[in-house]
Image (cartoon, rainbow, N blue to C red):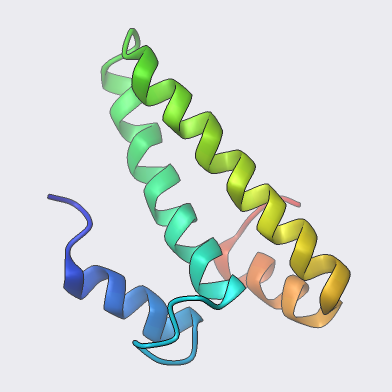
Length: 89
């Protein structure tokens, strides 16, 4: 399993501020980015897995919504998370 409890805690500790701050926008964006990269690698090997492709598109949309929210609320936090995760936009 690629997303264990320890991996989630590490992501939230690094981006969310603490392990328990799982609701922060930065932590959620980082978690979605981790899941998106995993699904992208899976789809490179399994091109006809349409259920996974649909889940990937859904995750990208959720991440985009969170990024738009963060951009509207606090542009500095938005710029920091985009730079830290290496996102294009």
